[in-house]
Amino acid sequence: MQRIAELRKAKQWNQVALALKLNVSQYLISAYETGRHQPSIEVLKQMAKLFNVSVDYIIENTDIKTPVDAFARNGLTEDEIELLSIFKELSEKEKQRAIGMLLLLKSNP
Image (tube, rainbow, N blue to C red; front, side, top):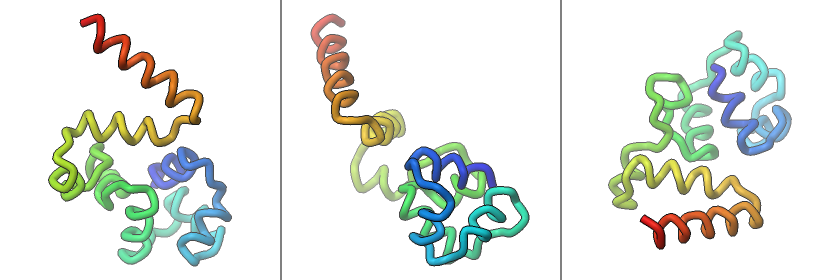
């Protein structure tokens, strides 16, 4: 499951860090990422919460990261949620630059 590795790297976690968060071994994380083993439903649910994505996204059943109930809860579109997700991963300096760019776009339609 390549998505596990992608999500883990996006958080800048190594396999050991993810293993500790899921209470499994680093060997299992490696095995999940290479497809040698499949995570249990319980581990998939934990991953979905940690990464704020749906289980379907982790198992590559969809390309939509955010669980459907999150859309309903927040009343946001998929694009808005994607922007927020990207924004959350930026450094403080990058966030300020992004806000500046958005304000510029808004003032110059």
